[in-house]
Length: 47
Image (cartoon, rainbow, N blue to C red; front, side):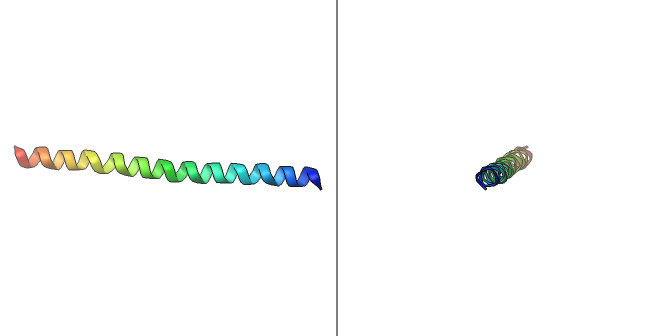
């Protein structure tokens, strides 16, 4: 029983890490994608 609970804890830790990493990557990538687009639009309008 103890071994099963330890295994379950490790699985849940892994799931939480992966989900938080996915959310973090998604937020960072969205921020990086929107910023260059805005710069390109500003540089195009200034020319």
